[in-house]
Length: 451
Image (cartoon, rainbow, N blue to C red; front, side, top):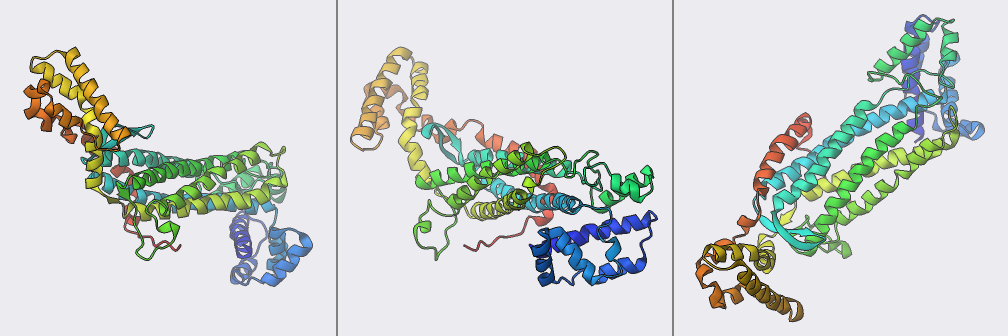
């Protein structure tokens, strides 16, 4: 942390001094060269002692740096405030944080897209309220996860691209100190603001600030991370549920032991745990933004030092963990098939009724026959713990003799998945693959989790 505080001050000091020098203030090349030559000479012991006396981290490093640079000491931190250092650096860190997270999120999407494509047409039970419902496919379900993550990419990109620089605004945002430095020359103040902003890699600066940039910016940035946390929690919860059904399993470390070695208690649950923490962190920037007094208050400082980096760090490890999961998901088609055959006879009753009607039967009469046989089969399943024998009952009933030859076709799972495979193909081609184009250079990076 101390190195960070020192270097962020140097970062902003150099940029500021170079630009002031370019606009004609009496700053010598020797002063700039002296600061550059001592950029890495950090006396941590002195900085710690200065902070004990001053109770101010930025000014502690100003004094420490001035000790290394006696010639430049008079112009270090010239016209600036601590928020010039802290807020501008935070905005750079937020932007760079998004640039670190986005390729990681893109890799997760890429792995899931490959998974969805591979299993686009593998039928599986769909669920509503975690009760068996109309069939879907394993790949189509993965696309539900992908759609949330695609939205997260767009949200992170928007939050990053919406960021502006605070620039040089002064104690209450009026730029009064800089106007005084340039002897009332408004054009030079505006030019300085523009030059520093561009040198920091931003296209625009906020035109209006208090001593700080609006803390609503932090709300916007962390809201995107919170939404990502919600997406990951939902995906990993689904994986845990499917692991319980033994249909899907996440990668298993061969030497993993303890309760975390259970197929439903591994990385997915860890991701849920961290995602919950990420979601909870959203309360901090909301309360900070709502509690700012006039041009600023200091009760944001300690909170932001925790909530901002912790949110990005949490999002980072969640994405690394999710990449590990999605690179090694194991599917058990035979288990999925068994579950389908256990439920499909109940779901296929309407198909059976329509087939009887086409063969000359009466719909109402057939419906009653199916209803009775279904209840008998359900009793075997629920009360006796037996298998679903509805199909056997239908085959034994003479009423259904006209359609016995059609039963296999009527119960083919692929006839119950609608357009799921086509939806997967279209979604990946139109929504997912184009979104990944900017991140192709980072797509082959692997992750190794240290537990």
